[in-house]
Image (cartoon, rainbow, N blue to C red; front, top):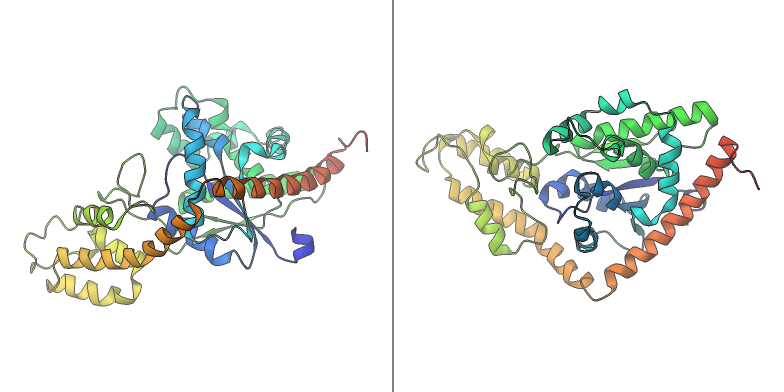
Length: 335
């Protein structure tokens, strides 16, 4: 099915398969994917090619990581009967679009992309940047536009990617004729989730995450060791919730109790252990159904079956888009 026949707009979003997904991914994008899947025709990309922009020397991890990320999405609540989950490298039209788009996207625009600049520093690529790394926003634009997506649920740090996609769609339409919508970015209510160690955000590379597949005991151990208010020595000392990692989790997951917890923290009538214990209960309420769905989908061949079906749907939509692109660019030579 497609947007023309269903009457619904489209979503494109997804993940690089660099390891399991965590609560930061959950609040950053997964929640919106699940909430909107019945309203929008949804395509979820498992971006294995983009993973190679930083992990090109370890492709052997991809088979496990691709299936892990897919299972995390299904466990979070995506319904494979109505959502298309697909593998990027197996949709050749994305690669075709990447080549066409790269003809009119300037190097300066890519070099000044905030995400590129930040990640280049993170991976030490400032002086030795690969062509694929510099150009991955072009590839991401092709990811979004190959199915003519209207909406892209993303975390805050990926909003510049959506801007490149909007520019790409607009520039293509100006040059060749109207083919693509200008996709909108949908940012979550929680811009980013602080890491357990108090770092700016949860990150697999920093090892400061609560993963969607973590057991109750693993979540408990992580929460109990999380950074709180370093100035609070005794449980009845007045706290400073604005600098506390656990309070930031209450802000993300437990808004109903937030005013009460903030007041009690400031007055010193709730200790850090009690605050962490309450957060454990809140997170468990989120992760318990995730674990149950994981058991349902984690069966031999089930994830591969879902990926094959979604990839076929993505290829179909990609072929429709490329037909329009070739007509617009006058490259449909043998029609």
